[in-house]
Image 1: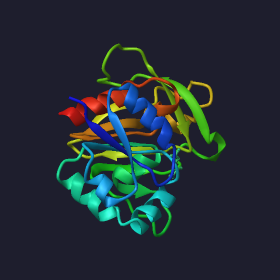
Image 2: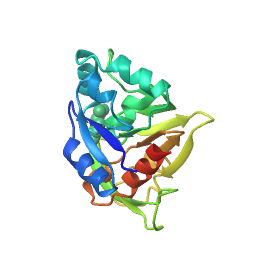
Image 3: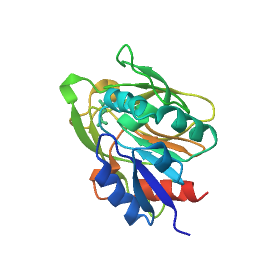
Image 4: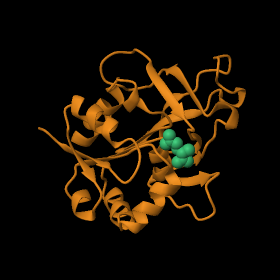
Length: 207
Ligand code: GLN
């Protein structure tokens, strides 16, 4: 069975997600309109700038249709800004910033601090298909998950503070979670050429 995964195409790194999803065996479509959203079996919310994507979701009148589909059980994978959009609660957002919600977590936006805008590290991520190799995770002005509700499974944490480039306060922070059909990562697996996170999402979307 080939399924169709939409990639929200308002802003952010849409092309990279489509490539990773296609190598995981899905058909992909860019989503900008409610009619396109209605046709997908799952949706990726890409990284970018969550405040901008929030505004565009409202302008394109996709926010309420997306909340409705999430409430019906649509599988959604949010990466970085996409994780922020999926979170029920946000710390460090702008005054008028809203999220779509659905995922019972609190995220802290731009959590890793100014001195470390970006870093890369190898991360153990639970439950990926294939092998046990760590994921090479790229973090770009990334959020972390500050706390999770009881139905949320933690898939990955920052290993320890002794890794070069990783701020001390980041040790042990949660950076990948799943709650039923909702998957979220602080990092960008779509740019490191390893499609296993996308494969897991395609499996989730196939049910
Ligand atoms: N800092 C961005 C935000 O708040 C997220 C960055 C990203 O998606 N790479 O939306």
